[in-house]
Image (cartoon, rainbow, N blue to C red; front, side):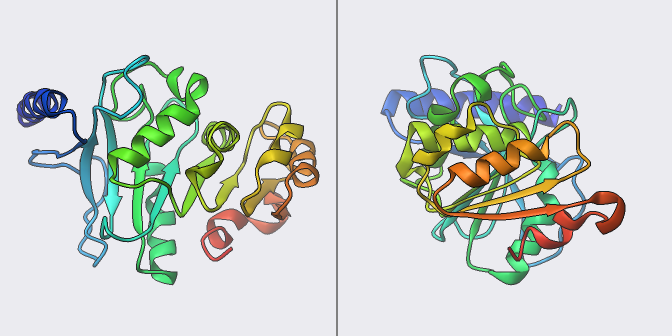
Length: 241
């Protein structure tokens, strides 16, 4: 009932925002806005937002995007995009956000549930078909022109790379783990620093593709690990790298 009421309140807010032609954030009114997440007594003060209507996205969606956020919105934005697993959501990045914040506390972390995933309504194809427009819409809904970093995993990695190909000024850097990519020779056009992390044993995210990405990107930092020998190397090392 609380979630239904929150949705109605969001809809009313969204109508008001549309009528005023301005942006774009409404706090979720919910007795448990971090439902499914764990308690967060830390200084991170994680909270939930609905982002929408997203600027520049009306041609393919008028649905809101759900996000878990942490930090001060005035600080540089780090935007996290999860992969395509059926249960994937913004929660994928919980540990990463904590690890990055421990090293660099003055960032604004926004982890979205891509349309059709987690708590976001909509079509799952949107993040594949409109990565540049969607990611720019989220960034603008957060009150920013660009992100300090885009962070992606698997399909989310492909999305952030494609977004930078479409809109090179979206971010100052990019970091991806277990990335997938298509025609990665195109990545020569991505000039920002890029962190790539691959598991040599992950058949779903072939390391051969990663090596081609490394060759194509002008400014890569590249790591390979082998899970059977190194364990969950990316979980321990992605944040500091």
